[in-house]
Length: 170
Image (cartoon, rainbow, N blue to C red; front, top):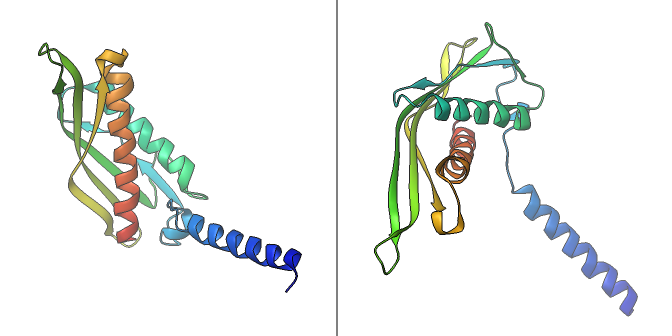
């Protein structure tokens, strides 16, 4: 086989492998939901922590997650073919690492929620978790803050957990 042809074959195999690897990346889409799910109502977060700002941030993140990943499914604020409910169960912000002077360097925030995704047409639960936890750290030595860094990282992990756990159930 000529060198030019070998290079083309190797390049083709490499591209095919890259495509296969990338196809393993996931997100949920309208096609992974039952076909009769056309609209979803994402309810306001029920807040058991009395932290309305955090509850609102979680709601916004869940709405953004659906907008980004749910294809042709429309989000509505009225009766829908599916309801997505989330309850903020607990929130902690604790020191994680200390320096040699016993000063806190990093903190870990932990957010615990319950999630329920309900099919109103078939009258059944699509996905439910009574306790889903995610955490995020922030480094005060790097001028990071609790809300902009720690909470944001924990919320991002929550989004990933909701997607990956829900995909296993759909």
